[in-house]
Length: 362
Image: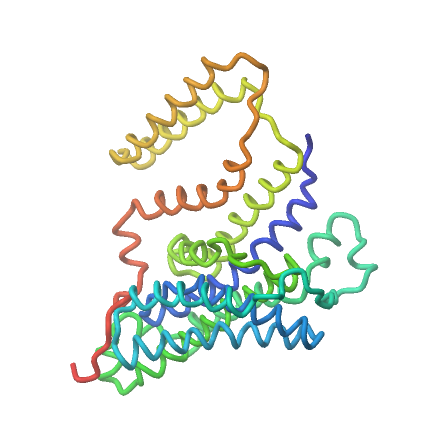
């Protein structure tokens, strides 16, 4: 089986777009010092609102605006709870996810399988037919380019503008920002609404463009992956883009492996053992030491591979579909654990006031 790299790249960009939109919005929220765990709920609300409006109105533009509005509406609830009523951010975010999933399921009753209009491509057919370059650069929907442009815009805003400086100041020390006269609550509420709109837009992309259908629970953990990508990116926009493409690439690859009913040759197993061992040797060389938990996780993995090699009697090992489906999430978790192992670096990059409640009287 040979996977066409061009189609794989095209697919990974498409698959990563919803997660990218949600993650870049969450990055702005966390830069303001707010931890919103309700991304999953906002995404699913954007998905159902976008699909309903696309079906009823026949306008993709209105569908995307409705998706943004649905995500922002849930974000407004979170903003009122955490910024005005000073509720716990973690508990409010989790409640928002549960509320969004339930409300979306209720609103979406009767809509699965309903027709929606096609979304026009921004570039002409002649450009999309250019060999290699055409499919990769010119075959995507407009929102895909908007997502990449949004990453550049957020980076520029945070790094080069006064508004970005104020946002980062609020996230680093809300007390100092308040003492300088900045409206901390207003700034954070605007950041939360922006994050909700981005998450809703990502959900609308998922239902209107990628799947072209409404399915209950269709986000399937994409909101949690978006949250993880912000940590993976160390709160830096361009790293969010790379992380989203990494997740999209693994997700697109596992879909193609499932379609091809992929088998792993037995010879790959001993090779995997030696590759893992070599990787830890290199890590120990560059970092001078290996964390104990890494060693504890690696030894069972190596033993399992050796055991599988010993008990196999055929020439190939069929890959379970469940393992392929879980591979994007597993890989993302592994990368996050490795990145987070350097606690000093993570603490330095994280906004100092992240998750802390602001009291104007202090």
